[in-house]
Length: 187
Image 1 (cartoon, rainbow, N blue to C red):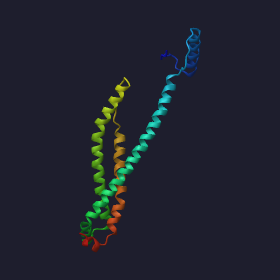
Image 2: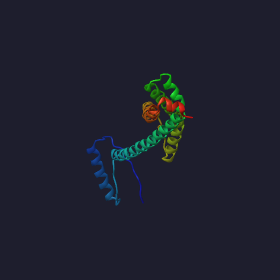
Image 3: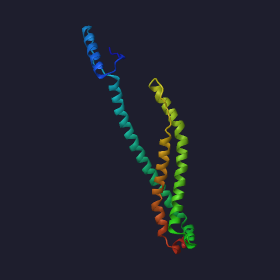
Image 4: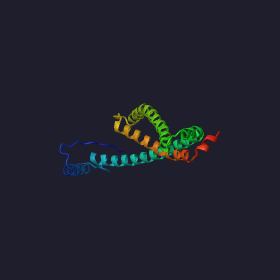
């Protein structure tokens, strides 16, 4: 038969914990009770912390993979957009638009798409995260203190917009490779 017992000590020093553990082990052995494991709360917290680091690293890697796929998808969409708007880009260049203006136009569109996607993601993530925290808390017979990290939301915005700017570089360059004549002749 197995059971788990928690004992709280007034003196929480390592020496006090070790002394209490040895005294408890001796008392239980005299009574014929075998202890398989005696750990302090600090030991449990350390083990849980190590597990949380592994989970955190996994989630960061998963988010990087998702961001890479999203960046490639955005780059593809912007490339198709540039192809479909060759004529408009040609007209802009014919009336004097500089290469930097064309690049800024393509980057601006990509950043706008990323900003809208970020907003939708925040609106969806908030209730889903709350529901998941509630579900996890109930499964562990407790409650999770769910808090939104404004810094995390801001960091995601910066990363999304930066990724969009990088994803727009190749389509913007392809828009600039066209001569005005080629762009105007495109149908």
